[in-house]
Length: 150
Image (cartoon, rainbow, N blue to C red; front, side):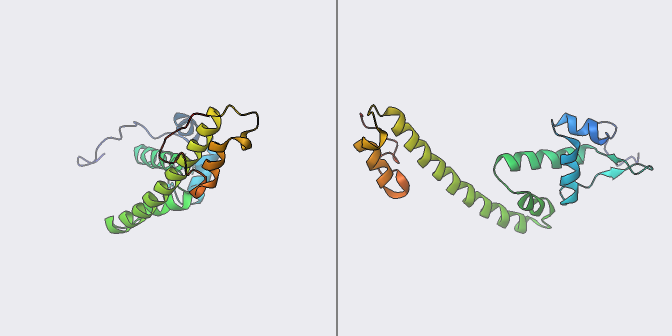
């Protein structure tokens, strides 16, 4: 190792099976991510993949991004963005998309909570539930978080 290089905090590079296991993934997932340009592991003289700390960071980004609803294409663009401006543009767009998804999830939750509070034999007969589904995007009554007695 050159004196300017830092040791890999992951220690010696790992093969695909051991590396995948550290993240609870199947090896084929890592192969797929490599095929779509998300990973580019080093290879040993026999051509076997060897994963180190930089690969671990990329896998963590992919896992977190997928959990946030980002597509593999978006994650590839994020990881390969050549400069901060390109990355920020992409992230602003994704942040706006996530805000819309969060708002939709809140609306859906309000509707479910309204239905949970309903004591009517038939849900569609409940006037509060009917108000909720008749409002904008289906949550006029409950969008502000107020539940009425059913």
